[in-house]
Image: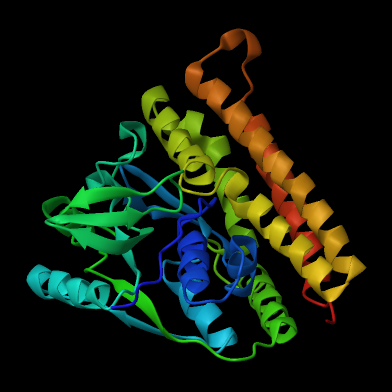
Length: 334
């Protein structure tokens, strides 16, 4: 068993935070923003036909597991990942790796994580966290969205790892097996930027990427016409929750990606990236202002009420600004 002590760091987002924490333990100093950027974590999707917690699904990040996989591939880090059908086999596999002194990243539902505040515990099955040890029937947990480490009972961890719903985590776990002596950060950064721009700008269908932002803007404008007030509030609330509360630190990951561009600009001594970072930070401010105004509608403060039409226009402006930025960013030469 390795006797290296695991160090917990709090982060803005779960998967990029877990990636950073696992790599730091393995001896690679990679910040969360850098993991998020190299892993091309920024994305957008709005799926009116897919209901999550009774409301259409909206995502501000790439699908679960992609960030870890891309970071490993681009930095030549070997990570073993596995899914399970049998909870007993999944827990046995986890115990075996922990016995070697290796921290393990996992997917689970926040609904079954009792250490999280109750307000955050709803049926969201794509939360990443780390188990770094075990005492008796309790597992020692490093959740990147928490300030300090905690623990969870075996029964609760099984429930979280095998929660039903979309997506099903199926006991997914991953851990570092090998790290390289050298890494080409410039190449990894460039690949991450190019892929993010491609996924934001290229999808031909209306639900994903930049097109998805305009689709959501259109949907929100029609909420008062097509939905009764309570359901309109529910739909709007889910959009805000996914933007501001699901481990992002706010503004739908825009601030986190802006931090990546800033760090990459400093590392590569590239002034263009620093300017892109400032520009995206301002766009992030507009996203946050949208969330603030939407919350006003939900609270029904009529004296300060903003209309659904105005919210729609704010989203269209965010989409327009991002389109202009990403079209320029994808042409950058590093």
